[in-house]
Image (cartoon, rainbow, N blue to C red; front, top):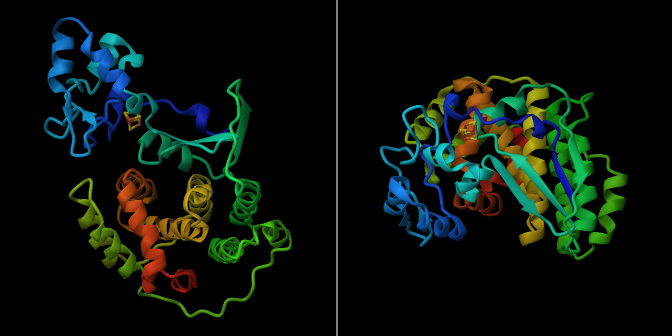
Length: 339
Ligand code: SF4
């Protein structure tokens, strides 16, 4: 099977006890059934502690409820007691995989490093080079994938190439990106997906006559404030960003953020047909992260946004719905926010 990863993937190293925003805090880790079964057989005090800590959450999954906002196995040096005493393989699948997000498409797999993790975030924003993706082949057999992949994979390639056209201002590239995604969405809905490759090959963005929308950020930040919250000061940060003067961040870094989101989300349209919504999510995310960056710096803005939004499926679903249902976040409004 082919596996695709961002070009900095192999450089990732967990900061462990030195991490300033450990993933062992704030999040309640789900314990997969196999690991939970293993914990039933661990002897001694640690075994007793593991079995005593296991609880069911509201969804019925096994987890370790937080203790003072921290995993009960995080010790005084911010290291994992399970990892230290039993080895990494004794930790849950979630712990072993974080900050990797893995998407299996059948014939290939894609893995990203979530920008909520300070080490992954630093790798993403630690370079100004165009972000590329590396492919390797594993022994694992390929499985059949969705029919749409044959058009959506090259379409995403084209969209990633548009984002990386550095001769143009980033906002011009983001407009072109949205307009191509919109036309592709229309062809998908008309069941004319076989015309998408020709559309992408011959793509020149049409002139879109739109007026600047200065109210977009107020609406966007308030929408985010209505979603589920991980850390209580998130809403304060959103409110401060609403008052902050606009700051234009470095385009090369914003481009890398856009490519990160586009790689991660666009192909997920095979699950529900919503390709344009995910393209809107990419542009919305870049604009909001840039605006938050005016308050707390670009890297921290991305880390906070990623923690609050990318780790919460309900929040992601609410944003996708808003792009279709709310006029403030329609394609036209996003295009006008790019003026
Ligand atoms: S957030 Fe990242 S660097 Fe920090 S402890 Fe978790 S995986 Fe390691």
